[in-house]
Length: 149
Image (cartoon, rainbow, N blue to C red; front, side, top):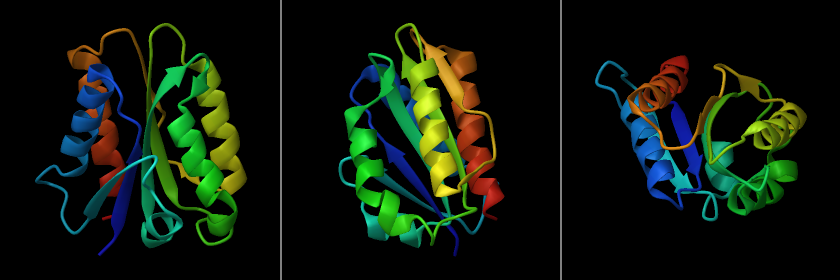
């Protein structure tokens, strides 16, 4: 059974709402035959990444950068997973109080280096995530999971 790994750093109510929306999309009843595994960024391992067939990344934008937790995740898995995960699909959602551009640049650089394939544009949210933003994150989660069906 294909596996979608959701790696997230969820330190705030806004990020929690976005994580729950992503999970709801990935576990939508129309999506069959995909195992959804979720790991906090500080707990995700090389084994988790190697066992997954696709990835959904969630991070706040902190001072123009991805969270330290997600950066730690990439520092941990980058070289051990470099060759084995090329071409695998991924998507991302990012929350910032006023700017997400630095975080997106970092995610693009790292995932390009890994050779992962972005299957949907990242969902970028500034300020309080409203219904439209949460719907977009739900759709993102569904898109990633459906890609693996």
